[in-house]
Length: 161
Image (tube, rainbow, N blue to C red; front, top):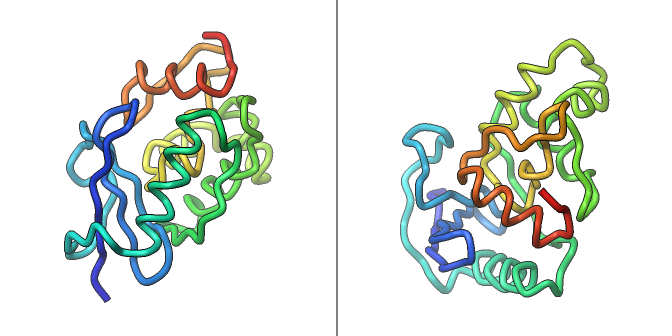
């Protein structure tokens, strides 16, 4: 089964939404680094149902009308990465966690750097809120969409940078 994709404009730039079957598999950035997220062959399909649903929910999120996404997700990665990404889904809207917090949450308190690497490979940005993970000092750290977009997303959620 091949991936379907749709491009959508947003306050954080052009996003590429990707799905396989009836599940969302990726939200990619305009400034995406080649190879950060590995997907198979993709076919553009702007009317694919899960992509339309994702676009609608993203629009509601950016308009301040949605604090939680209700989408079926299909993460592709290692078991460790999937543990990290599942932990991201538990971070409440408007709150942040450190990489150390995530490492402790998944029961691997010494795996802080590995958590950072997995966070950086999160294929479903925004929905799996990797932007809510910050440095131990409270500072914004690396983000595939760029630090300006990370700050914008956190501000949208009510966090003061």
